[in-house]
Length: 93
Image 1 (tube, rainbow, N blue to C red):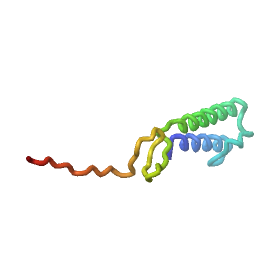
Image 2: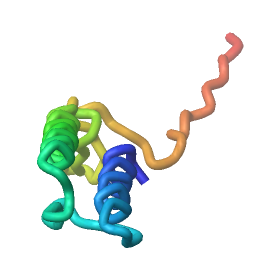
Image 3: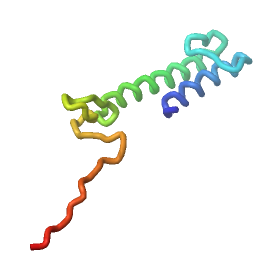
Image 4: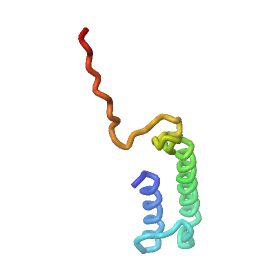
């Protein structure tokens, strides 16, 4: 689980705990004080911003090229497994 998901879960738990239940929702804040609602909005905004910034990082995106190779957002080839390097031997002459 990513830090982003953990933070959202922690926020939902805090909202729920204030209501006396195990979990809450970002849309269920009527039982919170105005100051608590503002803090929930701040945390939600920061989480949203962090998700957007993360999506801009080319390392967090990948695609398949025409040959089926996995490449990151910079176009560098990435490997699901360690690449196989051919065995090179020196020829004596």
